[in-house]
Image 1 (cartoon, rainbow, N blue to C red):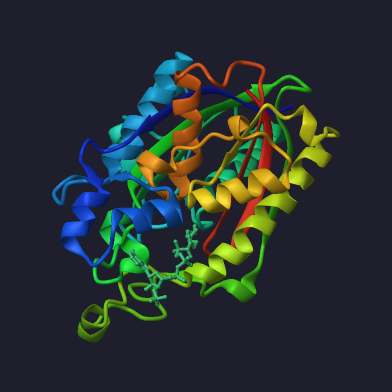
Image 2: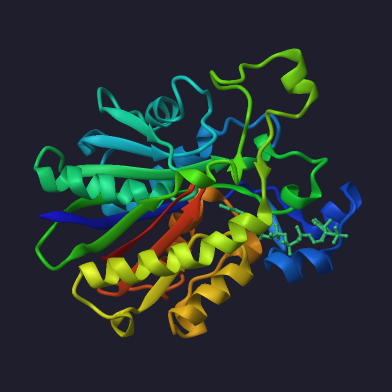
Length: 325
Ligand SMILES: CC(C)(COP(=O)(O)OP(=O)(O)OC[C@H]1O[C@@H](n2cnc3c(N)ncnc32)[C@H](O)[C@@H]1OP(=O)(O)O)[C@@H](O)C(=O)NCCC(=O)NCCS
């Protein structure tokens, strides 16, 4: 027995930042941002907002959609790259906000592929028989690690959270195939240098901006499409299916050009690809569950549809999961 999704939820902070807002802050143009990335707006927390609120709201939505109360969950998994605190991470704060009592929790850090990795972890744990209901949250407060002096990165990211409740599936339902991979040679394509144990916080790390996200955009771009293409093909093959069987593709929402190029290489119709990068920007681990929840609530993705979710991100990690909704 594997896992199926029985509830979905998402949360985007109410404050939106448009490209025109960015034009007033940095040397950029809305035209450049839209042409290069497809992004028109992104959502940001206010500076005094608690980041945990995003995962709590998304998790609450997923539980209420499934009609499951918080004390019926066996495990909370939180995929995030920029936790509320380096220790103890994000999961305990989301668990507290959801009023989970003694429920175990842990964070998963696997770059922007964290949600896809989380699906595979949850599927395995449910398959093992030790867990019946796992709440998987992808949440990211990227505005808190954005360098506003770096126009190559600051236009790309947004805040948000998405969540799914996973429960046992009958054979032939739920997660049907998956593929996870990584390439450690590319660890420094996307990273946040300081604040960990290698470069603890000092006056000079703060002065140098080493607590902000750094990215080698062109390198990421070159790797992203072939990585998501190969893992998508592999996940579909593992399930014994063909790309022509797939109803929907939900790629990590990093850049519209990456998404279109992936769809072309997979010979999928543009209308089969779920896209929300235009209004949510890149929300890292949250991007796929937010896009899934929005598409399901809009009546596009329906019960029984075959959906491939694929991502790449810091590490670099990449992978795909094929799931029947
Ligand atoms: C970031 C990204 C949009 C940049 O696009 P690009 O076409 O590679 O652009 P470049 O970095 O080569 O820069 C091209 C020019 O635009 C300029 N530029 C960069 N950011 C700009 C901005 N926000 N506004 C205006 N101009 C900008 C550069 O300075 C450069 O100018 P120059 O030629 O005079 O030096 C693109 O590389 C990308 O999307 N990469 C993948 C990022 C990603 O997916 N990250 C998430 C991983 S999970």
